[in-house]
Image (cartoon, rainbow, N blue to C red; front, side):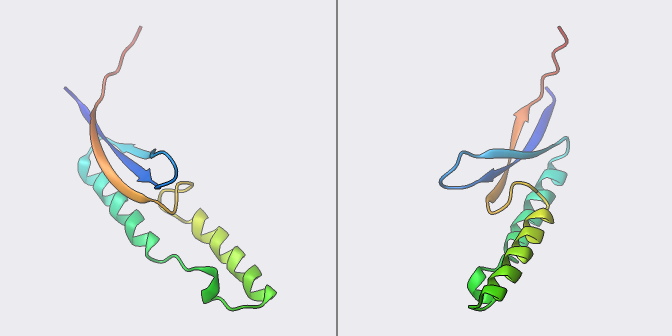
Length: 91
C-alpha cells in the first residue's frame, strides 16, 4: 500500500494541524527540521527595547518572520512527521 508522510505542527492549546504532505519521508523530515531550526530564530518583543518605536519595529519584524516561515502560515509550533496510508478513490 502506498503511504505519504505528513508534517504536523503542534501547539499545546490548539489542535495539531497538517502543514504539508510528501511522498518521500526524507522530504517530510527535512521540512520538519527546517521548521524546528527556524523556530530557534524567533525573538520576543523585549529584545527590541521598551519604547513605542521599538515595539513597532518588533511587530514589523514579527510579521516578516511569520511570513518567511518554512511552514507558513503554521508557525510557533512543534513539528513532527507521521506516515499514513494513501488511498486514491475514484468514484
